[in-house]
Image 1 (tube, helix red, strand yellow):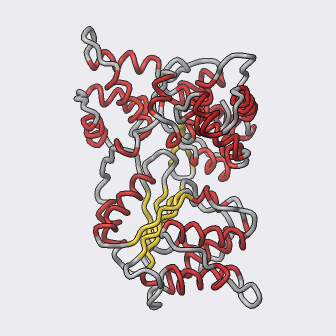
Image 2: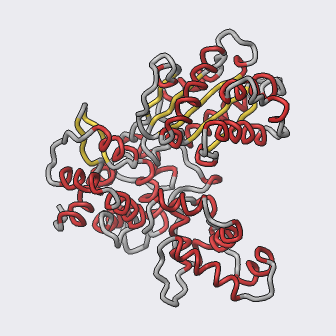
Image 3: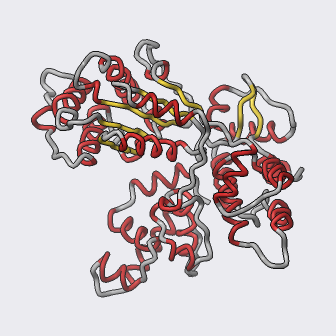
Length: 435
């Protein structure tokens, strides 16, 4: 399966019409609907031509066969918000996580209370760090809901949607995205002066004198996937320094006092930046940990499942307390209960197939395998990790990369595979022997 990075690159740079066809396919539209409403042509073969190009984009070997289920499967893995339930049903696929209207949130006290207390402070800054799929976005939306109760304006912005051409274009797209979400018109021509001021200064002016000044209440600005910035030195230096300055200046500046920042990121910040300019040593740091046994039990109950203590232990032995892996397991158990099997027996059968490509984690495991195999250094590191049960000391950058895809957990300066699911799968796939 194509890696997440490759998918995001292909999707972002896909011609507009082809992207519309892709979104229509995963949205459950028929060929006739795509022809009439998307392409607006008479010849249905044009639909097939676009789909053939999508196959090539996503490295799908169709060989004359209809492999649209693979398109749905890939998009369902990396961009599930685009996929309609009907499309999933058509191809016998399940959603990789609860839909927005079905989101299940399990509290991790006292994290939520600390965030709620912090966000009412002028110029607040909350930094949420956790590997991917650990619940950062859900926590951010809980904070947004709390801010809404306070009467705050709110903007949720996924950093993947900005333009990373250079710092000036990035900051302009940032301002326009925030303004659009606040339903404010584009006023860059009025507030952006390239003759005398830097892009960072212009961005601050745009926020202070236009965006924030247009609001009567504080603005809760939530920036998810901040890691995307880390890969661009010039943009990171300018933007991260800007966030730090807004937080500090907001302690006494009346406009910036109205700004409350929440940022979410999966990896450590690794670009050289003056300690006095970094936003990663100020504000409230929040590290999301895996669920404990009681939280796992509550999570199961939210799916209508009553697991015994022994079953919770067995499940956590395989996948730990990882929210995404648990949600997949509970979704499966909920939808495959049968009269001839107890829940505990069903769980045993599930655990037997879990670390294989015949199990429900197939897409997730294949995606991780693809990401690892594309980088020889990561592959060698995983070989080392599966060859021992003891924590291993790896190169700092390799550890950070493996941690960002939630494959490892740290033990001081060392790390180990996060759970037995990964140990068994990669032992078999990489060493040829499943533990």
